[in-house]
Image (cartoon, rainbow, N blue to C red; front, side, top):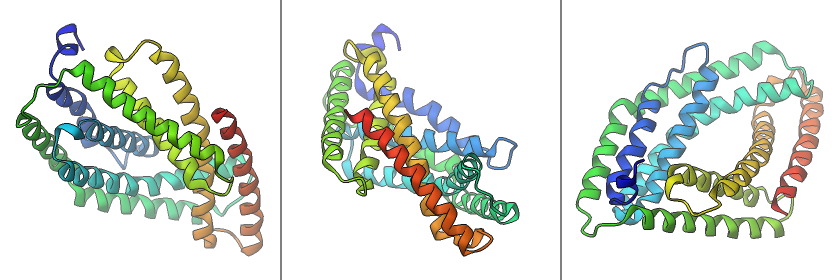
Length: 269
């Protein structure tokens, strides 16, 4: 982003940031050799788009923005189910938990098929460009010119304040109140994305803040992976050889989740 852009109108910046993300999502390949990594990249692209829509929401029709964000959330959630099975396979291996590979592979294939169905119905090749055009039209009808530097700092401050509130709440929450911890992860992710989008306009010291956010995201991401794996396998106990194997595995995974939660809590101070 050059100097002229940084001093320009915030309305003109949305397309520059959204277009690469839309291109990435459109070219997603669910069937290649790197399907698992591609699923992850698709979800990241969709989450970043949702963050952009949130950031530009003050300049747009709020209801329209929330409909678009809900659509992106549904598609990402479908991809997330298949991604959860990939993560579960990795965690089971890391914990030395044996699981009938035929059953696990079958569940992963079924999850991938469901992703394919959702993506086919979502028709991202057309819906995402249409979304971009709709946002452009909405921004073009905005009356007031909004200096991008002031806009960026205001939205960064809003995201930072939200994250700070969630951290304070999580510090007081019980270990079993996972929703509070999950909210910290989401808030950190949103602020990190905004800092990366607005890096040229961020306040002094943003790099240090970004480093801290990446640490939070990593620790809480590890915790989320562990919790998601537990929930997934509790809901699909039939993938285990028998009930005794399921009980032993879930007990071991629970112990790992508690360890990861203690590690995450240290980041909060």
